[in-house]
Image (cartoon, rainbow, N blue to C red; front, side, top):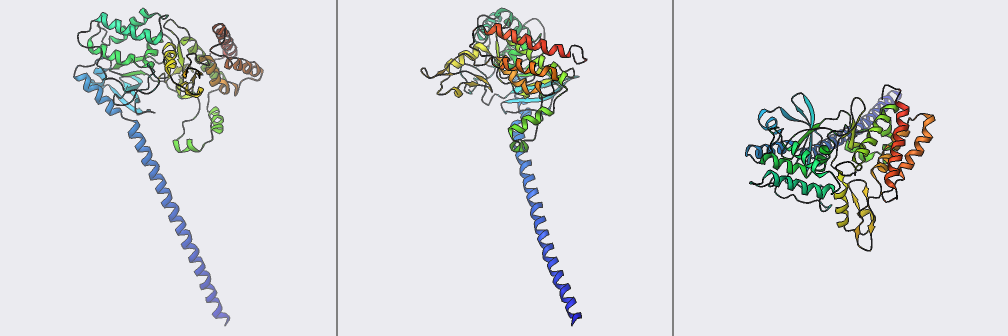
Length: 428
């Protein structure tokens, strides 16, 4: 009888084992299916996003078609459309309307930026709402003289940067850039390209600051496609996480995480001085004042020598154009009066429109962007004084009396404090 019990017990255990094994198999198959499903969905979404965002081929075809028809011309046209020596590399676009690619032009590494003319443009004009562009490259018209074109450019710049700027000097710079083949004259196709580029804030800024070191050099153009120097290290700090991870990482933790991926403190100090110098360059310069309306780290980068570079200047706008546009902006609350990421004014409830004066100047917002970046890892003997100066800087307001004098004082104090710490090191 005992012998009969052993096989039965063995069969019972075997049956339980098989049942458990089948459960494991079902669970394994389900997890495998779920992984494949989620992975396929992520790949599909990424591919869809890529094809929507990255339309460089379309952009190149549009530009080259107009070049071959003789509508536009510029210093990059022949290389892009005939010689094939300027070509698109990796897609960096964040919006379909603004195509951005790494590129190579002979031995030079650059960044190619191109506007698609069938989408809405978000440039700051008479209004802050997105607007459909008029037929691209229709101005200037055939028969327009060089003098008439100069008048067009001067009138446009006067509306953007104001009467106080050195308009004659700026018009001369624009015409020099427009002469793509450097033959001493601006042809109609070159003028059409220059006029299209002149509508873009980033190109205007590149021309205004072409002798300064904190903006990438404009290397060439064809229509409203243009090429600038490539900045080796971007963003200013932090990690570029895949978008599924971005959704799950809490904002506070992300800010802390970003600060871990930065250069050594002396190098951060040098980069920060570069940002302060850029603020100085755009504050009441010879060609007017500009507002930097996006102080996020993605707007900046730096070189191998840790010199700061502005990599995205689309939201650096002439202050005169900003004021005029804000006066036209209807509002109910203060949060209706924002341009870009952080250029804010207040709402005049009696009038129902935004006021023209920006609430915080560039310097205050730059110090806010640098606060955590500079304080983390700062030398112990310097930290208290640095923190004090940064908070004094962040407290600057656009409407304060004697703001310009206070602005200059705080800017110079901060630069001096940082330079004293790194002037004796190799990082300087």
